[in-house]
Image (cartoon, rainbow, N blue to C red; front, top):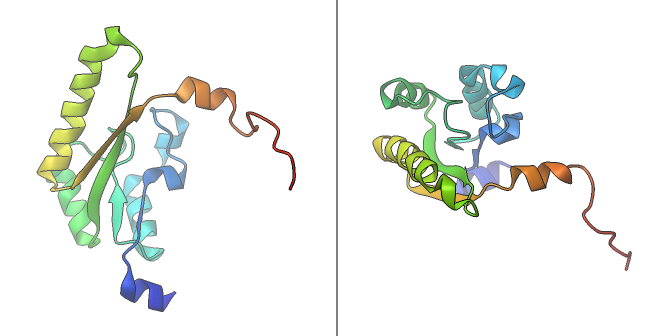
Length: 133
């Protein structure tokens, strides 16, 4: 592992600590403890996770990252791309997350269709049977 750490930097995400896309019981864990555990596990960066889990004020979040020598790298933004009526909300969500990432100099914003309902319908179950080879 030390050879890998010399050649690569590793990042994680709140999702790896069980933080789900929307507020709920998974958000009850301390983000500070999570950041400490990321450092302890050898990570040097993190994805933002769902907007609002980490502080959304860069004046609060940046010092938390800096004291742990972590970099914020990106955010995944789930949006309902198939719902034309949601376009105003989609644009607002992208702006909120983008502004926070920009303030923290994070280089990536990933936008993907929010398929939470479809994904949850098949969670833990294959969508089709795969024949063994």
